Image (cartoon, rainbow, N blue to C red; front, side):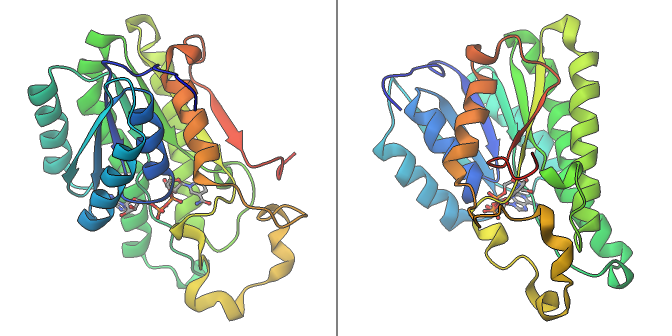
Length: 258
Ligand code: NAD
């Protein structure tokens, strides 16, 4: 990581900070001097993220957290408002929190579909809506977590794929809508990354899935990415190194969808 200090004096919200890529991004940005506020439902996971980030904090970097659900409107409004009140501004928003549930489409309830959309897509809309007025003031930016499932056929995760397709569309249109006001909006689209989310992706339906449909899901050598592979690209996009990247969705899958 060297002596980079791309986030010194930058106030950053990262959702889904208790685990996986959210945690890795917190650690990366705190190491680069950021003032990072992690958001998650999981308090013990957030505590662990803070302890890990403090070990490598650099250049004035600091870390704190707020507990709450990203799919609850009042919570989202309060989180953004509290951050701006407490830290005086907001420079970067990373919409990372998400859930994956696997099911056969014919067995997927409307309630399940809505839960996934609310967590993975509605949350992104609500956080962007609340953050944008503050990001205009700081000429800040947003990085959203999409997925290769937005572009390629990933079976048994239809609500999830739909939510990530929505994240991609929202990223493009928000970037265009706020281009003249100086706010950049980008996304990353990871392939299979080794986090708790995909430790057992097909859960109860595992015995019942058609493996011949999995050509897109794993690399030929079986290698998965690490959360740090994603955190480094999120950090690039959110920093001045990404200054002329806007409305872009970067696929990060080790070439799996080449
Ligand atoms: P993860 O399960 O390790 O972490 C997700 C975090 O989001 C957890 O800490 C969880 O508590 C939090 N979260 C879930 N619902 C929440 C809610 N309502 N409010 C607040 N926090 C909530 O997953 P990950 O693999 O690190 O995934 C991070 C993002 O990357 C997600 O958006 C995911 O869809 C996306 N993604 C993951 C992969 C992969 O292979 N792991 C691939 C492509 C995209």
